[in-house]
Image (cartoon, rainbow, N blue to C red; front, top):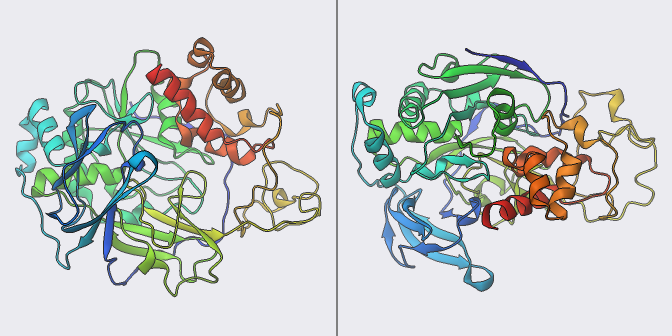
Length: 454
């Protein structure tokens, strides 16, 4: 039975520079990259291509020796021009110089009727060989799902509440057929329900509102209402021994295209947003696109930070960088490397803070849009217990005590305090409001790794 859940805890960060609802024309980037670093838990990646090899969209380029059934494939066709490595020869990017016209590997096609009778085994085989399986993420731990497991439910968050989040009506307009096909395939993979969770504070896109074979739930409230982890907590919490899977709407649509069209289609629409973008808007491109074409001649100044993803959970990249696998937006903010004398105490209405401190009067105008830089306004210090984490996290867990349990490497306490229910994005807002300036998301991943690999 569908549910309507209203969340009161949380905090919306209203940044200036939201993308205008228009898809702009721009020359396609020359290079695209597959980034193993977009995924958690890839411990022993093995390349299937070398520099100079020619690939098609859907050609396998990498797999993890730990689970060699899950193939990672090229998002576009072209020549592999570079394999970028980091410390200890860690693979950071496989860069492809794209063809002007994309060529595709061919996979088996199914009609909409055939999808109703497809077996679970055949569905999994197609998902694996077609390279779309990495869209399926497993909780606990937030790693690529194990095809040998059966989840108790599958969850899809059909809206995003992060700062400057793109409008899903723009991203997925006209994709109803593929989304429904993806849902029909996912339904074969679980013994429970497929949950499609929509925004209860806005009109729901027809891509999601008319979907069948799934349960549609509505969530209302401030960020992190759009986080799938928060939604799972309120619909069907994860207990010890439970497994659930999550998929993004883009992943569902890509699954639908694979089964209906027989191709690995990585085409997508991305938002370029932020206060330092002259014309924040949307662009058609492919997964892993180079950002250079999107920002050239489109910035207010050059002293900026490029973030693949949103301002809370995204990854810092440079002007020659590429978008991460799951990201459908590029955020551009002022670089905050300047020293601000008495910046924390001077009265102002130009800063935003969850705390009603003397110098930050943002609570007087909650709808105002702010131009914020990346300055943390301080350095890490002693863990101050203020109770503020519990005010922004709409989950029945105690984040302060969970973080302390992780730092103490207390496995029993981590388990009792909800480590199975969270990944980094769920506590990203805690990091924003933390007066102690701790890297909360890194601490959460440290705790997850301790539970998973110890």
